[in-house]
Image (cartoon, rainbow, N blue to C red; front, side, top):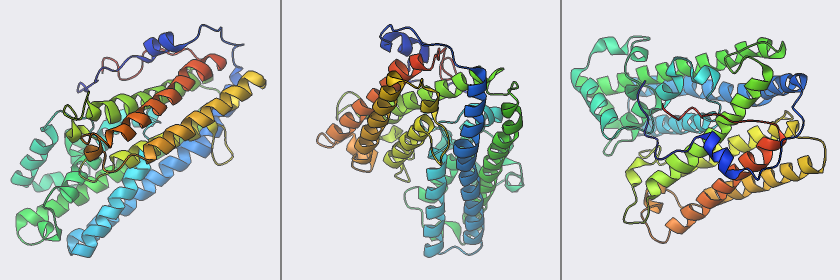
Length: 371
């Protein structure tokens, strides 16, 4: 497994130890309550979001197929719009990494980020030079490096500087670019469908309280999902914001922002936060982690604090001037990024310091450590 750039990430265990005020956890949660929570969360949060992701990727592949057959400026804009829709859907499920997204390294293959400088561009350039038709066959890209699969390769093919509809029409090299985009989109759609189907397959064993890929017991499955949410917040803080921010405008690293070419960095963060707020508080009438809080004043206070902290963080992130790569390098605009960073950290503190002990959740090492 490739070693990810950790950017000084703390383990969730270390963060918890540093943040908790020392109050003892309340009574342990009932396994039956955890079972009901998991089934409700799957039906109202995980499955609808993965269904949206799978549907968007299929539409994207169909759109690219039509564009590659007859490239024109309007078709390129439609393909880019479809890419943006998939990116939105992906940002809405990134926090649900345990389970089907981890299987077969799907998460890394769907979006190879953060990346080592230049590795993706070199591999894509090599494929475009070689024009190996076998890579266009169904399933072929899935056997290649994660760096040339999914959204990462598609963003470069569609959004690289100088790309126009003419980049896909004419000689063999240009037509291969379009065919590669279609193959990558079909591969992406297959991974999205596999992840969706993987979550569907979890419903019966979760309802029966059986061991699943999420954990050997319902309680451990709940803990796994909560730990993943903490990790997702950590990614937003450390990789999506602190890494490009650097220590000053002069030391900023705008080139490391997520979705640099398509200009989606700030929007991705907002959607990530909205998705995690839904995970914490529930959506579509289903449960969030707040549903497991004790039915007393402490529970009500914790839920309100969590709601308010996420609302503030989302509002601040949405106020960052786009694109993020320009904002981090501008002394004036950096203030809005710094402000959002503080509020996102505060929401994470609420998760770790308030919610976790009330839910009797103990966090161990998160999935980014030692990766």
